[in-house]
Image 1 (cartoon, one colour):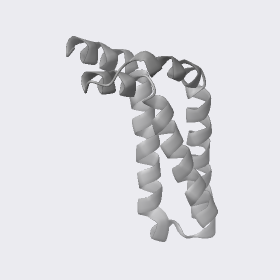
Image 2 (cartoon, helix red, strand yellow):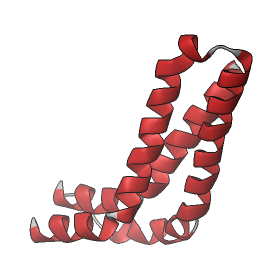
Image 3 (cartoon, rainbow, N blue to C red):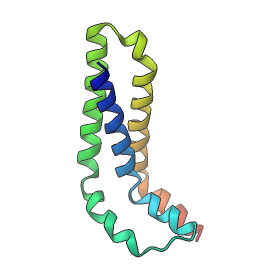
Image 4 (cartoon, rainbow, N blue to C red):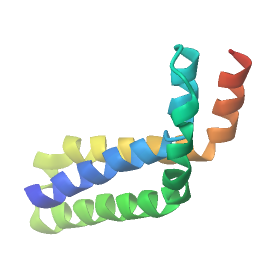
Length: 107
């Protein structure tokens, strides 16, 4: 089970990274970092839905395996953390335009 739990956390962290790929550079520009390196994130943004879908599938599989093996009580909080990170990634992705507009207004 630990392998699936680790995979779900890796998937959740990668989903969070991909979801913030367009918001994070804007926030860094507000902190004074240059923006010439922003072109790197264009290719990552194209794969964001695929990465988020795979991450969600890994989290669901982790919940199912945990339930099947009867270890849900022991791993519940780890699974909740992974689910929360993936949910946050989806929320950031769906609200990306609003977040970027807000950050642009702060410039």
